[in-house]
Amino acid sequence: QVQLVESGGGLVQAGGSLRLSCAASGRALSSYAVGWFRQAPGKEREFVSTISWDGRSTYYADFVKGRFTISRDNAKSTVLLQMNSLKPEDTAVYYCARGFFSRTSSDYFYWGQGTQVTVSS
Image (cartoon, rainbow, N blue to C red; front, top):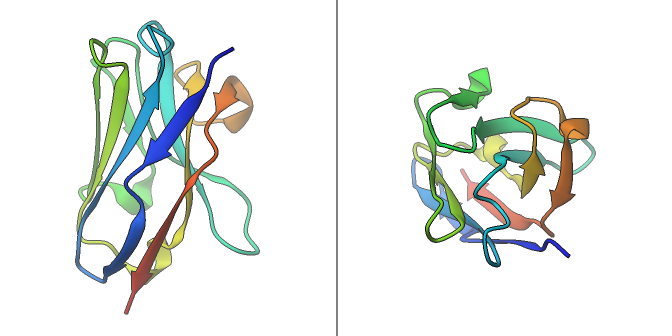
């Protein structure tokens, strides 16, 4: 069974940075796209970023362009989301997921449990 585990969330002041990590056992990520989504209280889950299986292609939601960077290390079966210039509106639970290279959550079939990111003003 594929298990994805996010880490790196926490509390940070506005303008600060966090780096989220998505890890899976074995080669569970190496042949698949990995996406990051987030869900704030009272809101629907929304797309943040995704990276193709080989790392050559990426997508970002408009609201994170220029601030967040997604990367992957298939040898370590890890995908990172570097988040800079964080804003209070970035506060949410962040999820990583494995699936197709897409901005649509239904194209991802395995999800982590999420990690909380809180940005104070």
